[in-house]
Length: 324
View 1 (cartoon, rainbow, N blue to C red):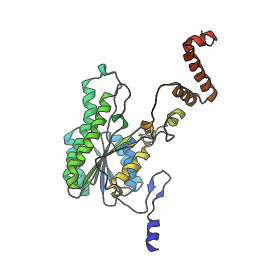
View 2 (view 1 turned 45 degrees about the horizontal axis):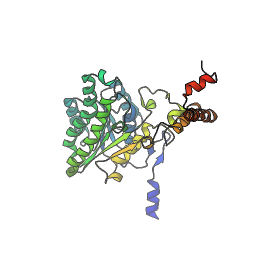
View 3 (view 1 turned 120 degrees about the vertical axis):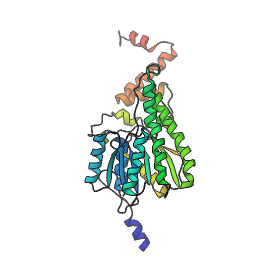
View 4 (view 1 turned 90 degrees about the vertical axis):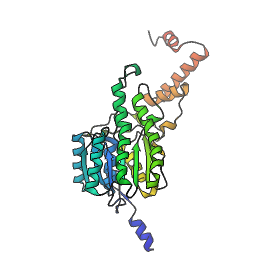
């Protein structure tokens, strides 16, 4: 009976912000570093881990965002420190690790989250400087942070979690620098996992899909997502930074101690959704976009009629005077 009471008392409650709010600190006396922790997914991860007892260090190149997040966490009673850091610069990374260890005496978890996007220019217009900058931040940064954190993590083991992306596995046009950086990060993850296993350091990757980070910007902004944006996900909605933060908190815990070297996709199921361009897809897309089932069925019938009679849909619409 006593053990059951203890179990019930330790069940996490759910706070108004959607995060688990444990009555105990499963990460008491542990220190974590979250790169790019000033805004977006990194900010949500920093908040979640701080709420569960971590001493959180926010390493970010953006001083305004880093200071904002440090202040926010401290006002909630959490231990948080901002250290301005460019993860692509080795001197910055060395200084970060030394400063964290000097202040807290340990580095238990490293979240390699800092990353930048891409211009979207066609391949032939992309500059080599853009390629290098994206690779430097998104891939070299996690390598450098892991390399220099390990010096201190070796003392008692720990966890490294790399925030990759589903862009490592599928692409839209003109995303070469970003997709390559995230694909490299997946490979870096399993290489580090094997190299660091003797030191009881686990290394994992998390690949988010479409995440709406509006509420975690500095300052927060209003989401502009549409009904269609949500409905195209099998899970029924676009992801939130809190979704990723919850997964990271689990992976950082002893509950995941038999997991290392793997990548976990968190994307609402969208990368498992097989799509072929046919009448079904067109009909369903029109219904989702316009929220009009009858119109979608009529357009489907038009396509099938055109195929049967070897006519273009444009010729049919002209003939019935719908278009000029």
